[in-house]
Length: 199
Image (cartoon, rainbow, N blue to C red; front, top):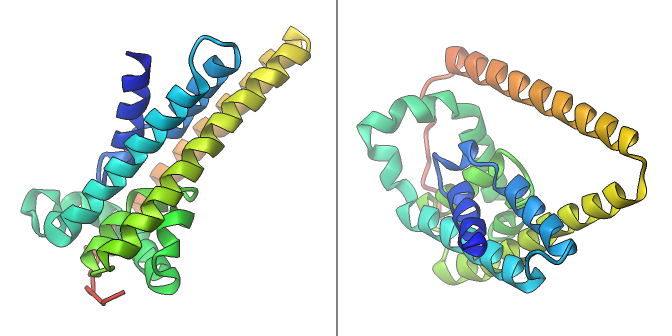
């Protein structure tokens, strides 16, 4: 059951539109910490996370430009116009390699597969890059959790609390800044235009 949960959050974080709302990397890192203590299997977490990310990105790619033509989703696209335009430029510049790099760049991660499908990236290029990107991301996220657990076990408890407090404050500031930028972009820009340029 825990492995299905790892798969689910990894999948949801990779799916366009809802991916911005799901803390998949954080959840996989937590599973990595559990694997470090022996409560979960390292390989079980790795396979579940990589598979979820692979399937989620693949679904976004297959949906391609279809979601962009759904009328009730237009407000969402308008709110994220800047991120969509940035992801489009990113994919046009890096091609299939953007699928791998995009896995590590939030919030670009939620848009790259969708843009790749919209722009007509060849299926073979996308799926090969998707395998590499999903696997590398899963390995990286688990490593963060393992490293955090090792640090937790080696430092005094009071310093652990200080570190957690700093991380929480930093996360809250990031969320606040992201919302402010989203509102600003919504006012300054209209709905994004997806060019459909072949990649």
